[in-house]
Length: 147
Image 1 (cartoon, rainbow, N blue to C red):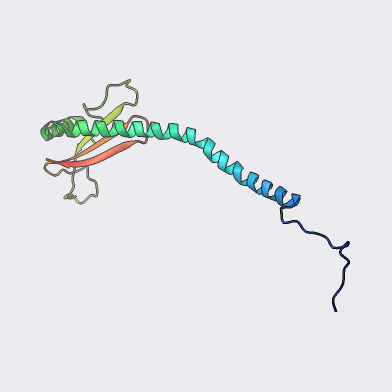
Image 2: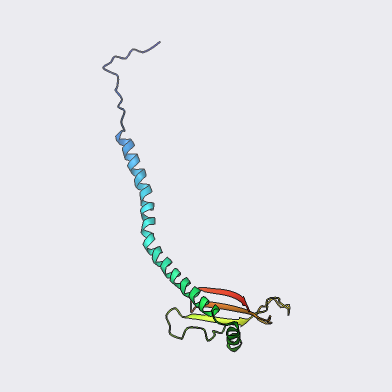
C-alpha cells in the first residue's frame, strides 16, 4: 500500500547547506583556530630563547676550541696550577665579563687505577679533562684529551 500525497503537500528539499549546518561548521572552525593562533603567538618568544641558547653554545664551543689549540704541555701545567677540577684555570675569562667563560682543567684518572671510581683522584699520563662553562648558568661543555 503506498500513500499518495498530493504534490502541494510535498516538501521540496534543497541541495545546499542549512543555516544550522553552517553555524556548526563556523563553531568548529573557530574552536580549532584559537589553539592554532596561540601556538603562532609563542613563536617570537621561543625564537629569542633559541637565539640566546645558540649564542651561549657558540661561545662555549669557541672557548673550547681556543683551549684545545694550546699545546698539551701548557694545558697540563695550567691544570696542575689550578689545583682541582672545580677551580677555574688561567684560561678563564676575566672577572666582570658578560657571559664569563670559566675553563676548568684537571689531570684525569681514566683507567681508575686506584679503584675509587673518581677520575680526579689519580692520574693517567697524558690524559687531561677540560670543562668550559658559562658562569652562574647550567651551560657547559666537557672533554677528555690526550697528548
